[in-house]
Length: 98
Image (cartoon, rainbow, N blue to C red; front, side, top):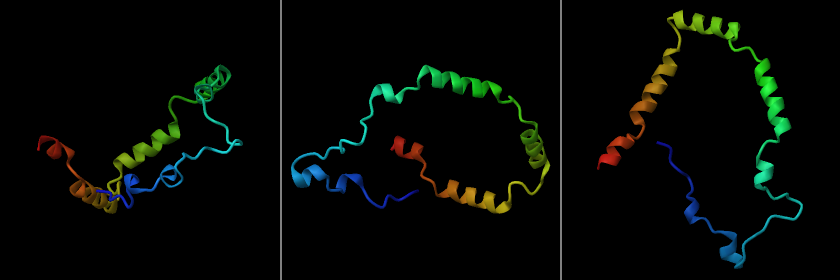
């Protein structure tokens, strides 16, 4: 389990010290819903770039096939580390039943 070094609920917030909330400087643009969305032109460019990509990359398929028959893949160290992570991870299903 990952231990949290600092908790956000124990931090002192600027408004607690000054009595007023801090605001971003004027030079920093404020985000709006409009700036979060892709323009239709950007979407079209991305769609065209995606359409130009091959659906299957033969070099990646070949690499995967070589790894699938390799008796040393994945390395034993990787399997050992993954096993440790699984054993030491928290089982949230047990907590939900309690």
